Image 1 (cartoon, one colour):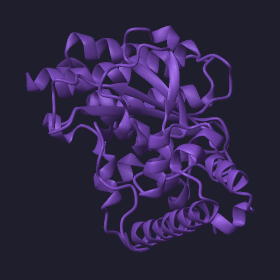
Image 2 (spheres, chains in turn yellow, green):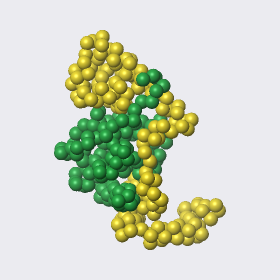
Image 3 (cartoon, helix red, strand yellow):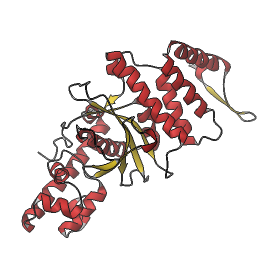
Image 4 (cartoon, helix red, strand yellow):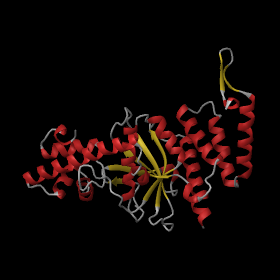
Length: 169
Length: 147
């Protein structure tokens, strides 16, 4: 691990020690040489952005992330990227807690909105027209197939004549 | 559905996959797990992207606005605009690529290429080059390798 350590030198600023630099150069060269022509073009264009003094921090970071992806291809097509729905099923403790809290918010919201709509005799179509979304959006929000934006929650609260806090805790 | 049941049920016209580089961006922008989960659930609305390619330049996907990225016309790259402030950031964009609909697993895939806070009216040349590069890697490594 020591060869990968980045040393911070007061006089010269941060620098990568020589063995780490050599390792990086080897990995970079291997990745580049094994790449197809089109991926080589990606590596070259992203390297130009990373080294462009006019690029801002966000642009450089995005280019660097792309460069890493280009240099380390997946073993199989199925390994490319991550399925967002499978992340929803993730079982780590923090993920479970966050998911449970979000699910409670969405469930309570759907329940209260349904009740208020019933009390007011308002249909999904009428609510959709008031908040300027399609009826399918209202249907999916109420059946909890999609999470409303806060901007939408506020519009729904206004359409139903209640405070946002009554719908979303 | 019970209060503890899973929200955002697994339905729709597309699967949504995020490229590795987009995860790095999300981690940088949103250190808190709750904010990342919020972004994920908003991005998951892409499951309901219409099967037939929309002819217009922009529109609504459920309660989110979207636009094709005009400078990348014909590449099927769009941006989803999140109106909410999440993790203290506004103008959040989810940049996506609608993959080849003939390749199904069992549904076709929409790829999240990038998540960013948009700070300018127009995307920069570097932004556009990065989106194009990520799209190319998806085509090269997912669609070409399978065919």
